[in-house]
Length: 249
Image (cartoon, rainbow, N blue to C red; front, side, top):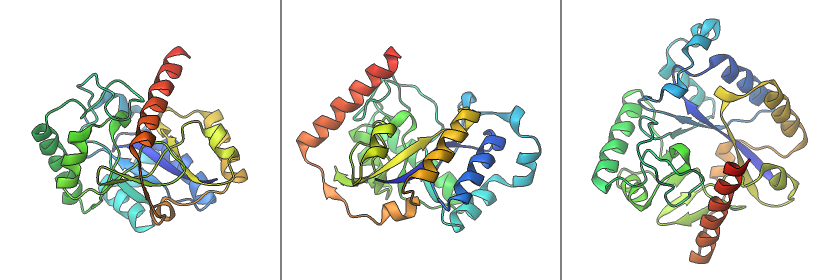
């Protein structure tokens, strides 16, 4: 199975030491990932200021660095607006039962997404890809995103990109170990470098060595089939089941 990488929670105050170590691993294997940039982070859990150190100093201006990554072929997604969870909703893809967007009125979601997009564009970053915090979104989210020109989502389950409710979805892995054993199809590994440890770095290094890895830009070139309602119901049930299993662990 062809496998690509998405990295969540990209902010000025993230753990730069871990980010740069993982970036070196990606560079070694010539993998250019998708990165989810939070336009106006207000989530204190993502602030790893104590870990800035010399690594942060090397980066310089955050937005200039993100633009440089984009110029190198890294793909940028807008990762929510402020990454603050205000709703106890799972939405259409209920891996988690909390959300920044799902459950809010259309007008409120539109205003949040519009402001987030404006912040990115004020720093010279344009994207039509959305990465929902906690993987949680609803029909109003999709409607508002399309109003603002977004056409793609990095979420869902499946072995190929698919079209649903006017958006293109690029699935993530349901269970990575099982996905990597498959010969056909494509999937995405979801990475949070802020919380990675030494064993995680070694694990992903081994995965990159042994599997057919591709850059996210190549994933975006794949054709997308229209998703049927029964398949969408199945995806919802799979997300619910995974939520329950994770809660039990």
